[in-house]
Image: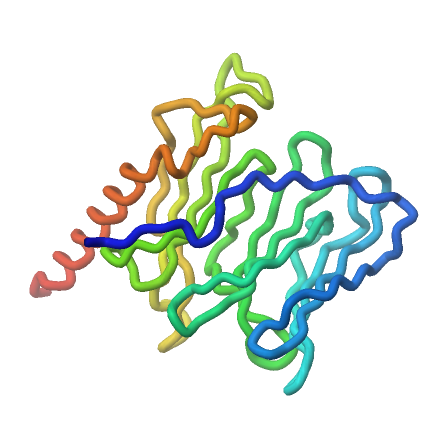
Length: 234
């Protein structure tokens, strides 16, 4: 029997505005990662809604301090959580929001100690979403031995207001070999589709759980087709 459980609750990130006269860098002590201290730094705001620069996260030494900086303008409300990618592979799930009021974006990174002074982002492509999103890590051994990362992000249709019901784009990222770096693994976009149903996040609709059967069925078909192609003589 396939095991399937939620490793990281799918949540809508609600980020409170910080006081404009906050210090330009705010170090936040966090639990250790692989025996090393973790700090996140948040810039001060230009005004009530827009940060002066990007947020960053660092894993302190030894052997040396290693950091990751979010893309430009993603500086509000940075957070970090430890996620177990595989049995013996923990990673730091980092997020930071852009400036804005009702339509700001959120950037995600999945980080491990890298080479030199930089941390490695295990997401091979941009996984940024709007603030009207759900995201989660699932585990299903029929699809992958590693956690599957999923996002649901709204699509604004005709006649809809910003916080009304919407259809959602579901994106599934799976742990795969990296085509550029030999013997390296990273998360790649495996599947993406738009829901048939509309969902209302304000009504606490759990989009990913509601779409779970469709998500896993699509991933199973993709895996079966890839295996079929690998068996076919070239």
